[in-house]
Image 1 (cartoon, rainbow, N blue to C red):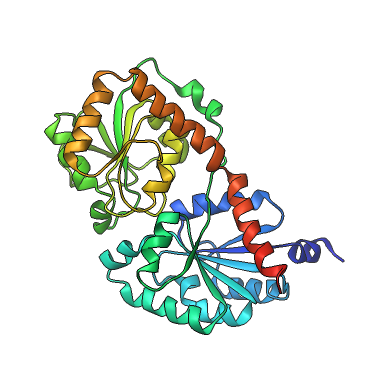
Image 2 (image 1 turned 90 degrees about the vertical axis):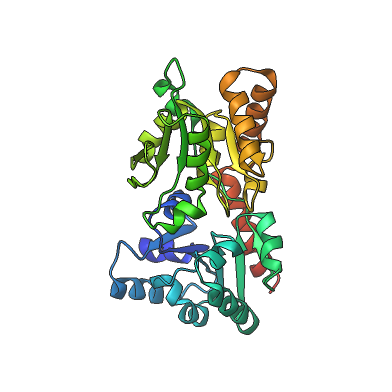
Length: 330
């Protein structure tokens, strides 16, 4: 057996990714494991991808995971073809049901429900909280613990003597995402507390929020800013699971997030807020006394929890449990 064929037959998971930002950054590290392979629709021609899929489909023990947001991109549009091609297809939804509503994609949820009834299709989600939310729409989804390979010590040399920034993140250039990610709420919070000079919006170069800097930088540069931030804030109106919050917790930066969706699993020990008044109160306490025992205790609990749960190995193990559940109970 030649090396290439041996690699293909040893695969357990084929990941199909249409999105070149957050989802790709989450999924691509899994390729360090020989039983995971990632294909992206944004880096290869359609003809080449189809040939690869046809070849890999000969591996009958393969689980295919289509990572999606409901956006009709290349792999997502192939889902019926993939269902016929592979014994087991999972669609991993990296957004909440509310995201489908905001983006006028409810027809996609209806279609997914029908597909689960006709085909051997299972839906995955990164949060137990989202399992509850999707159940309201008749979808029985399977929560998967995601995680990252992140070495805090690698970035410690970038640390400055004093904290300088208050940051939020919105990676999409599409205007609706300023609403989804709560950037308008962040702007109101920062404006009310007269903190515009310290505030930065990361992820795109939009200038619609007057007086607040916007930056689109590499991941390493983002980590440098995050490490030297007084606080990371994400007031999203809907959230599946927040990677930036994981990184902030690992860097021992205080986190303030909205009490919605996946944030409830993502940030277990604070600070989750229900409105701007709560955000103002907590932000004021963090800025006025960042070394208070209570704040330090919350930071440490979030750090230890993330270190225990949100690891790349746990991500892999969660997927392995899916594979074993299916292929050992046939």
